[in-house]
Image (cartoon, rainbow, N blue to C red; front, side, top):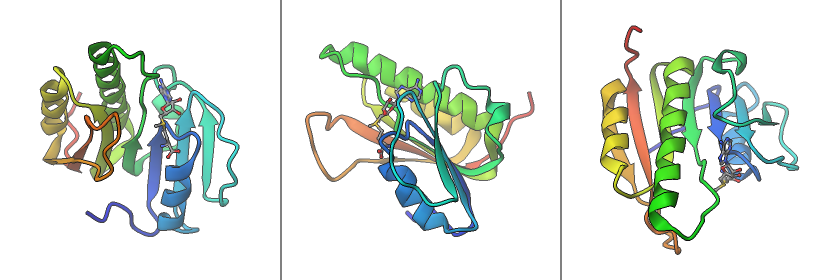
Length: 163
Ligand SMILES: C[S@@+](CC[C@H](N)C(=O)[O-])C[C@H]1O[C@@H](n2cnc3c(N)ncnc32)[C@H](O)[C@@H]1O
Protein backbone atom coordinates (compact mmCIF):
# COMPACT_ATOMS: atom_id res chain seq x y z
CA UNK A 1 0.00 0.00 0.00
CA UNK A 2 1.79 3.17 -1.17
CA UNK A 3 0.85 5.67 1.49
CA UNK A 4 3.18 8.50 0.61
CA UNK A 5 3.38 10.74 -2.42
CA UNK A 6 5.74 13.56 -3.27
CA UNK A 7 4.56 16.94 -2.06
CA UNK A 8 2.14 15.57 0.54
CA UNK A 9 1.48 17.11 3.91
CA UNK A 10 1.68 14.58 6.71
CA UNK A 11 0.78 14.75 10.40
CA UNK A 12 2.76 12.23 12.46
CA UNK A 13 1.29 11.64 15.93
CA UNK A 14 3.59 9.98 18.46
CA UNK A 15 6.66 10.92 16.46
CA UNK A 16 9.57 10.58 18.91
CA UNK A 17 12.34 9.47 18.50
CA UNK A 18 11.63 10.34 14.89
CA UNK A 19 12.23 7.38 12.58
CA UNK A 20 8.82 7.59 10.93
CA UNK A 21 9.11 11.37 10.61
CA UNK A 22 12.44 11.04 8.85
CA UNK A 23 11.10 8.30 6.58
CA UNK A 24 7.96 10.31 5.76
CA UNK A 25 10.06 13.43 5.08
CA UNK A 26 12.14 11.51 2.53
CA UNK A 27 9.01 10.11 0.91
CA UNK A 28 7.20 13.45 0.53
CA UNK A 29 10.38 15.23 -0.58
CA UNK A 30 11.39 18.87 -0.22
CA UNK A 31 8.04 20.19 -1.48
CA UNK A 32 6.10 18.21 1.12
CA UNK A 33 5.71 18.83 4.81
CA UNK A 34 5.79 16.52 7.83
CA UNK A 35 4.72 17.72 11.25
CA UNK A 36 5.38 15.34 14.12
CA UNK A 37 4.11 15.75 17.65
CA UNK A 38 5.06 13.78 20.74
CA UNK A 39 5.07 14.05 24.52
CA UNK A 40 8.83 13.52 24.33
CA UNK A 41 11.55 15.50 22.60
CA UNK A 42 13.01 14.06 19.45
CA UNK A 43 16.63 15.16 19.10
CA UNK A 44 16.94 13.85 15.54
CA UNK A 45 18.30 15.74 12.55
CA UNK A 46 15.47 16.30 10.09
CA UNK A 47 15.37 17.90 6.65
CA UNK A 48 13.78 21.36 6.40
CA UNK A 49 10.35 20.00 5.38
CA UNK A 50 9.95 18.16 8.70
CA UNK A 51 9.77 19.10 12.37
CA UNK A 52 8.69 17.49 15.62
CA UNK A 53 6.95 19.54 18.31
CA UNK A 54 6.76 18.50 21.96
CA UNK A 55 3.00 18.38 22.52
CA UNK A 56 0.36 16.16 24.09
CA UNK A 57 -2.14 14.93 21.51
CA UNK A 58 -4.90 15.30 24.11
CA UNK A 59 -4.08 18.97 24.68
CA UNK A 60 -3.10 20.24 21.26
CA UNK A 61 -5.49 22.59 19.49
CA UNK A 62 -5.92 21.07 16.01
CA UNK A 63 -6.43 24.51 14.51
CA UNK A 64 -2.79 25.36 15.36
CA UNK A 65 -1.31 22.42 13.44
CA UNK A 66 -1.24 24.13 10.07
CA UNK A 67 -3.48 21.65 8.25
CA UNK A 68 -5.09 20.44 6.16
CA UNK A 69 -3.04 17.27 5.75
CA UNK A 70 -3.16 14.52 3.12
CA UNK A 71 -2.21 11.80 5.56
CA UNK A 72 -2.34 11.37 9.35
CA UNK A 73 -0.24 8.62 10.87
CA UNK A 74 -0.33 7.71 14.54
CA UNK A 75 2.24 5.47 16.17
CA UNK A 76 1.17 6.73 19.60
CA UNK A 77 1.45 4.09 22.28
CA UNK A 78 1.02 4.18 26.03
CA UNK A 79 3.85 3.28 28.37
CA UNK A 80 3.06 -0.36 28.92
CA UNK A 81 2.10 -1.25 32.48
CA UNK A 82 2.17 -5.01 32.11
CA UNK A 83 -1.60 -5.09 32.58
CA UNK A 84 -2.66 -6.08 29.14
CA UNK A 85 -6.24 -4.87 29.24
CA UNK A 86 -5.32 -1.50 30.77
CA UNK A 87 -2.65 -1.03 28.08
CA UNK A 88 -5.09 -2.00 25.33
CA UNK A 89 -7.64 0.48 26.64
CA UNK A 90 -5.08 3.30 26.71
CA UNK A 91 -4.02 2.42 23.18
CA UNK A 92 -7.70 2.57 22.13
CA UNK A 93 -8.03 6.03 23.73
CA UNK A 94 -4.97 7.23 21.79
CA UNK A 95 -6.43 5.95 18.52
CA UNK A 96 -9.76 7.63 19.23
CA UNK A 97 -7.96 10.91 19.95
CA UNK A 98 -5.93 10.51 16.76
CA UNK A 99 -9.19 10.01 14.87
CA UNK A 100 -10.77 13.04 16.54
CA UNK A 101 -7.84 15.22 15.40
CA UNK A 102 -7.91 13.61 11.97
CA UNK A 103 -11.56 14.54 11.44
CA UNK A 104 -10.57 18.18 11.85
CA UNK A 105 -7.29 18.32 9.94
CA UNK A 106 -7.51 15.71 7.15
CA UNK A 107 -8.40 16.65 3.58
CA UNK A 108 -11.42 14.91 2.03
CA UNK A 109 -10.14 11.72 0.38
CA UNK A 110 -7.17 11.60 2.74
CA UNK A 111 -5.68 8.64 4.60
CA UNK A 112 -5.42 7.71 8.28
CA UNK A 113 -3.10 5.07 9.74
CA UNK A 114 -3.05 4.34 13.46
CA UNK A 115 -1.40 1.71 15.59
CA UNK A 116 -3.65 -0.03 18.09
CA UNK A 117 -3.09 -2.83 20.61
CA UNK A 118 -5.74 -5.34 19.66
CA UNK A 119 -8.15 -5.89 22.53
CA UNK A 120 -11.77 -5.67 23.60
CA UNK A 121 -12.21 -2.19 22.13
CA UNK A 122 -10.67 -2.99 18.77
CA UNK A 123 -14.01 -3.41 16.98
CA UNK A 124 -15.24 -0.09 18.37
CA UNK A 125 -12.15 1.62 16.98
CA UNK A 126 -12.55 -0.08 13.62
CA UNK A 127 -16.20 0.95 13.42
CA UNK A 128 -15.33 4.53 14.33
CA UNK A 129 -12.83 4.62 11.45
CA UNK A 130 -15.37 3.00 9.13
CA UNK A 131 -17.88 5.78 9.87
CA UNK A 132 -15.75 8.39 8.13
CA UNK A 133 -13.60 6.46 5.64
CA UNK A 134 -14.66 4.75 2.44
CA UNK A 135 -12.45 1.72 3.12
CA UNK A 136 -10.85 0.29 6.24
CA UNK A 137 -7.89 -2.08 6.21
CA UNK A 138 -5.97 -3.80 8.97
CA UNK A 139 -2.24 -4.21 8.59
CA UNK A 140 -0.34 -6.65 10.75
CA UNK A 141 3.36 -5.84 11.03
CA UNK A 142 5.57 -8.70 9.87
CA UNK A 143 7.96 -8.42 12.80
CA UNK A 144 6.43 -10.13 15.79
CA UNK A 145 7.57 -8.93 19.15
CA UNK A 146 6.08 -9.15 22.62
CA UNK A 147 3.49 -6.62 21.52
CA UNK A 148 2.56 -8.76 18.53
CA UNK A 149 -1.03 -7.84 19.22
CA UNK A 150 -0.22 -4.42 17.72
CA UNK A 151 -1.94 -3.81 14.39
CA UNK A 152 -2.47 -0.80 12.17
CA UNK A 153 -5.92 0.44 11.34
CA UNK A 154 -5.93 2.14 7.96
CA UNK A 155 -8.72 4.40 6.75
CA UNK A 156 -8.74 5.23 3.03
CA UNK A 157 -10.86 7.92 1.38
CA UNK A 158 -11.85 10.29 4.18
CA UNK A 159 -15.47 11.39 3.94
CA UNK A 160 -15.96 14.30 6.32
CA UNK A 161 -19.35 14.47 7.99
CA UNK A 162 -20.94 17.84 8.47
CA UNK A 163 -20.92 18.75 12.18
C1 LIG B 1 6.32 3.67 19.52
S1 LIG B 1 6.71 5.29 19.98
C2 LIG B 1 6.75 6.16 18.47
C3 LIG B 1 7.94 5.84 17.59
C4 LIG B 1 8.04 6.77 16.40
N1 LIG B 1 6.89 6.63 15.51
C5 LIG B 1 9.29 6.55 15.60
O1 LIG B 1 9.20 6.02 14.47
O2 LIG B 1 10.38 6.91 16.04
C6 LIG B 1 5.20 5.86 20.71
C7 LIG B 1 5.21 7.32 21.07
O3 LIG B 1 3.88 7.75 21.42
C8 LIG B 1 4.05 8.88 22.25
N2 LIG B 1 2.80 9.27 22.92
C9 LIG B 1 2.09 8.56 23.82
N3 LIG B 1 1.04 9.27 24.27
C10 LIG B 1 1.07 10.47 23.60
C11 LIG B 1 0.26 11.64 23.64
N4 LIG B 1 -0.80 11.74 24.47
N5 LIG B 1 0.59 12.68 22.83
C12 LIG B 1 1.68 12.60 22.02
N6 LIG B 1 2.49 11.52 21.95
C13 LIG B 1 2.20 10.46 22.73
C14 LIG B 1 5.14 8.43 23.21
O4 LIG B 1 5.73 9.53 23.84
C15 LIG B 1 6.08 7.66 22.28
O5 LIG B 1 7.17 8.46 21.88
